[in-house]
Length: 342
Ligand SMILES: C[S@@+](CC[C@H](N)C(=O)[O-])C[C@H]1O[C@@H](n2cnc3c(N)ncnc32)[C@H](O)[C@@H]1O
Image 1 (cartoon, helix red, strand yellow):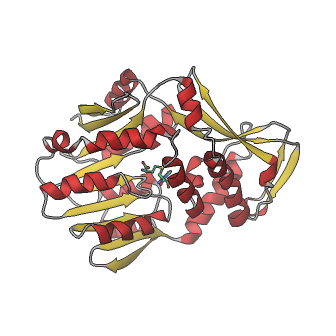
Image 2: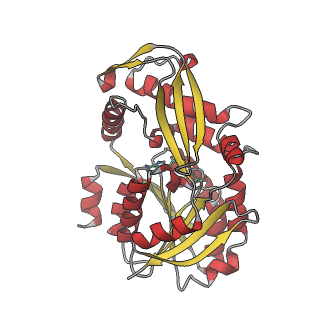
Image 3: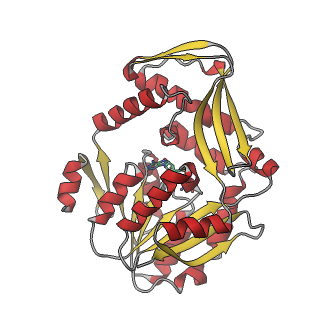
């Protein structure tokens, strides 16, 4: 399939802002329909749930940035400390010019460290951020004005669509990055499939750098997802505001509480919204009337934590070879550099 066919199939609109910045955006009707259909299905199940990808409207993305700055949310600083020491370590793996491709780029704050590394090795750097959130437009503008040798092509869509696009893009080498332990939001089975999809979108000499949060003390983990300022609670509840404003829902946010617990058997944080009363909610544009019992939980996110042996196992299973692995000082977080195994 050609790139043009992919663009047409995905109903992308190409927006060219200038010579160094362009992005592909899906048709608004498709985005709205996906949201309505998925909400309608997942809130009808026995265990009601909302996919965490729907957290990220513009308000949700801004709240996530606030979470990253919280003292309890150690993940960001741990990952930054690894990235800050990566310069010489990763350069030895970068043979020739690489394009940087980022899954779930968000504000692209940490990406700056990698752009600087690539700029020190190459005449110019191409960057493809892929993110479901429209925050991509703002972050790309800021990056473009700060890095004069950076050329950006953004894809405002789901990871999987971005990967399809990448597969047919061209023959240049890619360094694909997936930061923030966002991979932990997949359940183990879907995560394993997704890693295989990344692998099959990669060419022989491409590299994949992934940041993963490690298993640690339950108290540290639960504090990270139950911060004292209540920002994570606002982030979690915002998903209901989004359903209200985009799908005509009538959730009363006062009648829900943020609930995040560590499941020690499965090494994952589970995040929910708890209904404090028996209540009925109507979401007309998802064609749904939702009955909730008192204390019933709507599942909104998992955040899987990993052990080194998990990481080795899932990487191998998806057809990767581990080229290198780096940790922060406290060994809270790991960054793993992978290549295709064949
Ligand atoms: C946990 S945040 C991480 C942001 C940034 N990479 C970091 O490390 O701080 C996840 C990011 O991925 C995006 N995202 C979540 N689910 C997605 C999906 N299914 N497809 C594309 N982007 C997604 C969100 O919009 C958000 O910017």
